[in-house]
Length: 461
Image (cartoon, rainbow, N blue to C red; front, side):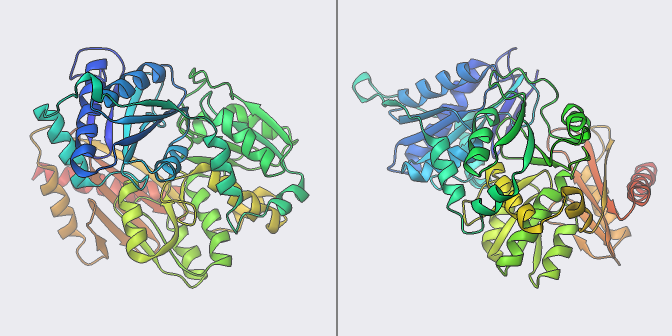
């Protein structure tokens, strides 16, 4: 069983012993810590909550709502929702914060509490640490019976979310409708199965084949939208009857696309394509994290903008976007962040912008993908013994490649012309994750293996 405490929230497997997994007592403890932090830092004692469709969601939601009420906090419950929908609802409802009950792309046995501030954005590093400290000390007091918080179930936010997407100036519903796109969707039996058909209908897409759109939480395959998990939708597209495949994760903040022949567009290229469209119409800068493809930088420079890399993690990308006034950004896992809408990864925004881009491009999805620089990312890791000083290894790697451009805001990233290697240590185990990118898969693998060999040499000294 696993319980992971991080600055952005608490996630773990359901069942097991207290403190070793996400048990009901752990849910109450960390919800109470978050609610206490809200009360200490805001006069606004209203919290929006929402959940994905995973099996444990209803149980966890009831625990969260009751705990917040016990602190004297009013609860606005969107029930089945998505991460970006809750993010939008927090400021709309003038709430002090929000909790999204989702383990994102993790398998069925996982759940989590994702924590938002009053802007509907993920809490900062310092805020997360403050909440974890409150939880550690169990420094929370519950109110007397006459001061209990209220509970309100609020429906209709999918419609509000879609209205906001349609109102974006760069979303052209008429252009999309005119193309009569035929689309296949895979929503992994979570809340995307509710909202994606609604969005596509609103965008004028009427020919939609739905795979796994029953929001019962029984994931039919690993819910992370990686190529190896998308074989069924690929087979449907291979029959040649559809123009595009769309896949989302359980909480609908990641977007993966497939070409008309069933070939994955590539999660890394979701952001690249959407950014290309946005930059064609709005001059500006972009941001992605250090482990994302260089193709975004290439596209940004082509349009006269500046590109910046942020540390891995949505909150870090958002902070860098604000710092650089970026007009679009995100992460290479299919996460599109478009500030014109809100500062959060949003698959609905990504779908609407991509379909507009595709409609105006006027050619097949595979041809659009072929129009971008083609890079390959190799993802590896090296497991170490607990006695090994991981920070010292990273420092020695940095010195070894000191003549190359190096970024050390999050581990060590070494650039070699259009190739790069990024080393990051795990926060929970003695592992160094190694990401490398090149124009060929073989070279990307070679770069990763070269760094792994360097690390082994350092250890043996």
